[in-house]
Picture 1 (cartoon, rainbow, N blue to C red):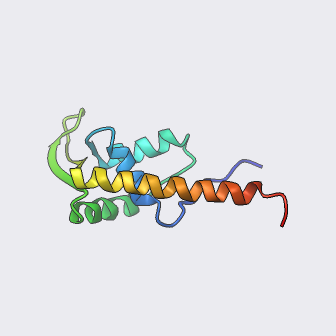
Picture 2: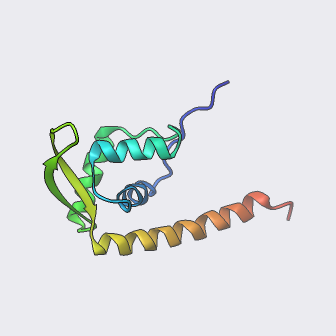
Picture 3: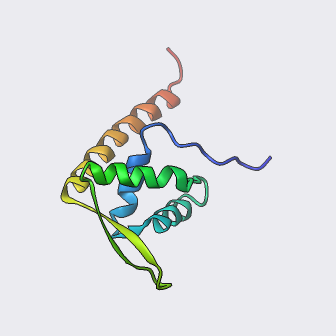
Length: 112
């Protein structure tokens, strides 16, 4: 039986988008491709979920955006992390690391 795509854990999408943009400015399709390539296509994000998230993060001032041309000479909106976004990313990574460490202890538990 082939493995099924993983579903996002609630509350992790912002962290994933912030991490993708930590490597430099990207347009929305670039963010989608980065997520798919980095997870070996285990996570499939719909454009209908990504663009509202990008706009929400921009409203929180975690991202800034500007229009530019892609490598194919098409107009696209490029998103970049702001200083506030970098601080949020660091806070989210710390919280997620603590959470996964706690879950690892639970899953490795041998008994009561």
